[in-house]
Length: 62
Image 1 (cartoon, rainbow, N blue to C red):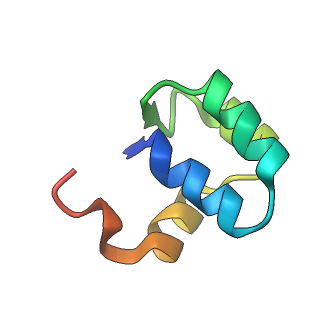
Image 2 (cartoon, rainbow, N blue to C red):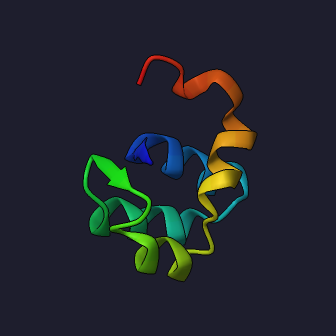
């Protein structure tokens, strides 16, 4: 699954994890492939399902 990096940054910031958001901003490409970048997402404490559930329809049409 592909997720826009901005959605991941938004999730981290909404959790108050600004340091992790900064790290993700520098380590992830603009479009994040959840399988390809699973190690980085895991290191950041991101479950791709969390991004989808917390941001709801924000990914529609992507």
